[in-house]
Image (cartoon, rainbow, N blue to C red; front, side, top):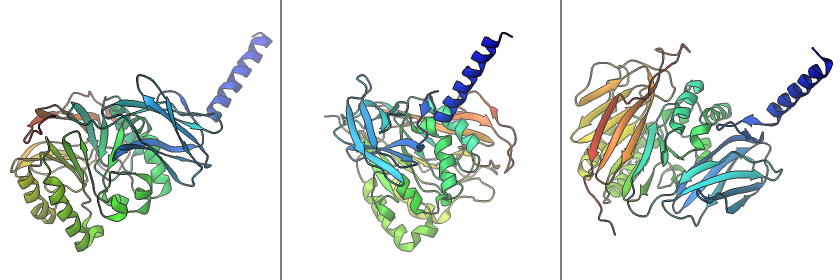
Length: 396
């Protein structure tokens, strides 16, 4: 080969290696600044949206943002912080799609992220639910990447985000879910593997209601639809915390709403061979759900999919976010449908009169703790059911 072509090939190779060293590959094929070690992710809190991320080393900069049809037209500055950074974006228009970027002082920027602000009245929307992403973060990436392709307003996680609340675990969680977190608002609830750790509360800015840091349980409204997140970890709540949470639950569920959706980690009812449901919480919370007209309760903990109906309340267990897969036993009372050994998530399309719920499979996985082969499957829903609006709220 001619020496000049060899020399040119060497230069190109060096350039490519330098590019890899300068930037991490982002979810859209664009570079992320090396200092951005976690995030970004977003959450709606009150009348604002919080953009969260973590830099190492700490640095200052701005969050550039604006309506999707205009691009970034405003900026919110932030200073260097040792730990998670939470930037509050206020004065946003309701029911509006926004785009944003994080711009660091050194001139580097993230790829564009997006979020939708809550509407004032009812507008149709889609949200996603999944859970139990711990242990096998490569599997979590497969599920999260598939979910990122959806046009969803927000995502709710039903707990057990990580194996244990250690820094390396959180790094793996945020890295594997980066595409998803960049695409929609994110609302988690506590699983048992979070261990009620302070790191959880430092990382996530949630709507707030009560308990530890005012965020152990939460609620928010999306137009006239009510969403409630609970902590079902009774070992951390103890009697006093559980009583306070239950009293709050009764009050918040007494609101009028077109639909009422509830989220927590431990299923009240389950055909899992070892867990079998939570009889104590079922006696305490199920009557409240029935009395207040809760439509669907979403849980995790059991690493499979199960749909059970009791007294008109739909209970959905969705634990297919990447954790080790285990078999289910014989169906329990009210059992409608179940599936096991599948990575999956839930898609919920909410219209004025009904909510259509779909269980979307992502891949087949082997039984147990071994890595094993993961086989992608078609995204055709394995189950689809519809819940009609019980208490439509009159529109202004």
